[in-house]
Length: 231
Image (tube, rainbow, N blue to C red; front, top):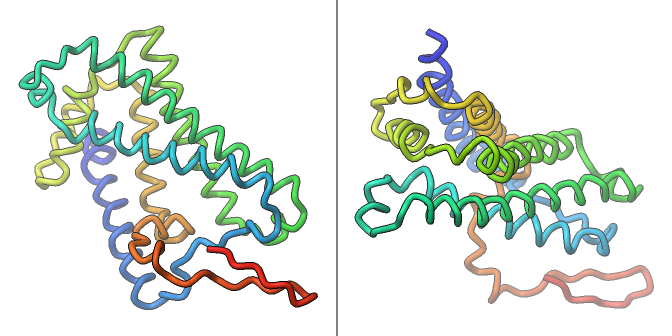
């Protein structure tokens, strides 16, 4: 029963919350669909942290697509050997994970060190950063430490097929029986994060800024009348 809950029921609960709550927020609380920037309060500490986090999360997303959504048979058909795949997965995934973790830690330090930023930081914002550090930290540890000391775990034969089976509504929870505990914890905390997205600023990830390059810049005016254009 425990296996069925965690690997069949729990993912659908989190997915349902994600879809329904996101739809509700978009339709009925559209004005809250934003991720307010704190750059106006403190700019120096934000630059490198934001760049590391956002580029790292993009690389990590691509890595998860390649490792979880693309079946092993595709790599076999392309002639990609297992040891080559795992080498690049560890190198690329490890770098992406470190970028995300370091960026988030720098963001958290900035919130504590800057009184003005701290004054505009909500409890939800702290939860988001800390939970992201937990998810990304586990992922980075598994990629860099576990896979290089214990051995490269072939998740393409277990986690990948299980995850894809969720989309066909024929979940194969039995595939998760032999998965190492650390990987299971990483997946569970990641699903909790997915369910929390509609209640945090992370919801802005579903907005694609296609008009950003062509839209007019925002106007920031100081008390002395000096105008500064900024996007």
